[in-house]
Length: 270
Image (cartoon, rainbow, N blue to C red; front, side, top):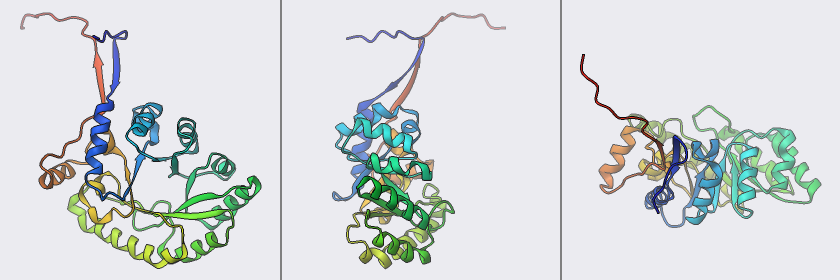
């Protein structure tokens, strides 16, 4: 069938390109590493419902978003998916975390107390991740404070600590590779200091797209695939470095923008 556009300009989202990118990124990982598809910001502008359904067909079982609103949209589409909420969750939305079986990222003692209370009121358990501050200077608990926070999770009858994570400050800048390696070492040393306190710990994740491609030592038991999932390289030096190690490695843009030609004519010079 020939596609006849109805509109003057339109976007096309390629399921074939997305499938290709998933395969490429998975080829960089050990088989037992969980693949988390990041669909925040309306799936990087590609359309959250469409991308989530495409990723589901690629057997992606884990998703990450920024906000509660995004998480609920994913939950409506995929009732059984594991949904990680990376961004700040206001206290008044903790009931929604419990109700929709979301996995929040915690880094504060008050969060633990309030979320445990919210889960108790609904008679449910909530799986949580803890974010460790390793150098980005955003949200996260400092390594020295982590044992105390984990102990609070241990004492919370309605919370289950299943994940530890961090985020790199400059993984896409390979001229600062030592900074990423320093963060990686600090993260895994810190994880090692508390892992025995979390018997259900399953997900240890630090790697973003750039780290998936260029920092294999950071992969852990899960990775968060973001910009590369949509066919965009995190930076030019990530692209050149990745291709130098895998000559056939390539990403395909998922989104293309088209427009109908209104007129073509030859115009005299001058």
